[in-house]
Structure formats: structure tokens, C-alpha cells
Amino acid sequence: MNLDRVIAVRTSKTVYRDGDRAVKVFDADYSKADVLNEALNQARVEQTGLRIPKILEVTTLEGKWAIVSEYIKGKTLAQLMAQEPEKQAQYMEQFVQLQMQVHEKRNPKLGKLRDKLSERIDLADVGDTTRYDLHTRLESMPRHNKLCHGDFNPSNIILTPEGEPYVLDWSHASQGNASADVARTYLLFWLAGDIQGAQLYLDLFCDISGTAKPYVQKWLPIVAAAQSVVCRPQEREFLLSWTGVVEYQ
Image 1 (cartoon, helix red, strand yellow):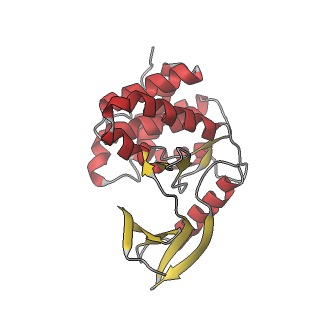
Image 2 (cartoon, one colour; image 1 turned 180 degrees about the vertical axis):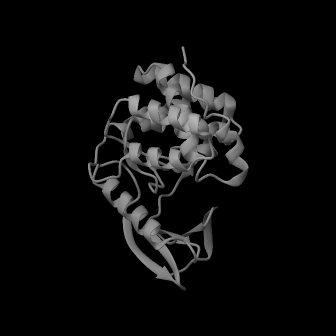
């Protein structure tokens, strides 16, 4: 296996290209259970018929776990947005349409997003009153079973030279309420410092999907609290600032 060409470096993992294969190599101390769960999630999402890289094998390389999947040639949507800022609205609409296609799919074997959110709220660094309010709001939200990506952002979308979009990185995939997934994407734009992009994204999603914006916004404290448990240290204060339960109009 030739791992000379690095495609991407992310927290606790490095992705290499080996011919027509992409090899994601995890740090030596990375949880085996999490690696196997990521591969299983991706295999289950493959069954929905979405255009995603297919899993080829799970293996170990020099004592490190690795997931081998198809290499998809192209540029990420994030790269295209940076290279062609005049087309941001066009790319953002394509981004939203693709996320809506994801939400149309179902796989009952995936974990439930609601359970994950509830468990993380229990672990969040918030006061008892805020925790109670977050749980109360979560329980009041409609129970859906739509496919949710969990980390849907432009860097996880590749457009091939033929213009075909592929969605990468299904480690956080679950089934649940699509608006919670949208709230997560909205916060990702904020975390990247792209506030204008965040607003454009939310406006487009709500317009195209017919979703009321206050409904998505009601998910923001829940999702922010949950994400504060597993985020990078420099993101925690920002996410915790979103955990106050308020009513949006």
C-alpha cells in the first residue's frame, strides 16, 4: 500500500491516496470501536443509494486502524466556493439540495440522533436549570427517522470533473430530525467564521424546503450543548454561549 500522498489531515486521522483508493489512517490510540462504527455507518449509508465512496476494507497498518474506500477525484465544494466567490449562492443552493436528498433517505439500523443528543446534554458543562430546559425542549421536538449526516459541510462534498457530487465522512451518521442536522451545519459555518455563509445557508434551506426558520433555530441550543462535549477546546466557549433556551419568532 502506497501512502506517500496525503489528501487531508484531520484531528486524530490522516487520509492518503493509494491509486484509486483513499486510505483513512487513525492515530494509534484511536478507539477501535469508533473506527468499526464509522465503517459500519458508511456501509449502511451505501445501502440508501446515495452517491458516496464505497467501503473496500477495514485493516491495520503498522498497528493503526485504517478504513479503505474508493478515491473520488474532484474538488470539494469548500474549495470551489473559495476559488469562485461570485458563485457562492449557486454552490450554496447545490449544497442545500444535496442535504435535502440525504434527508429523504432512511436506514433503521443507524443509531438514533435523539439518544446521542440526550446523552451529551447530560455531559455538557451547563447548569442544572439549563440542562433541564435542554432536555425538556428535546423531548418536545418531533420524532423523525430521516438520515442525518452529522457533519454536513462544504469540505465533505466532492464534485467530480463531470459535476457529480459525492458526500464524504459518515462517521456521525444517525437517524433523526433533519432540522437538528441543519442546525449542526449552521453552527459549523459559524465555527469556521463564515457568518454570512451561515445566514445564506439557513435562508436557502428554509426557503427551498419550506421549513420555518424558528423551528430550525429551536434546535440550536440542543445541538450546541451536545457538540460542546466533543468539540475542540477552542470551540467550547463559543458553543456553550448558544445553549440558552429561548423562543424564536
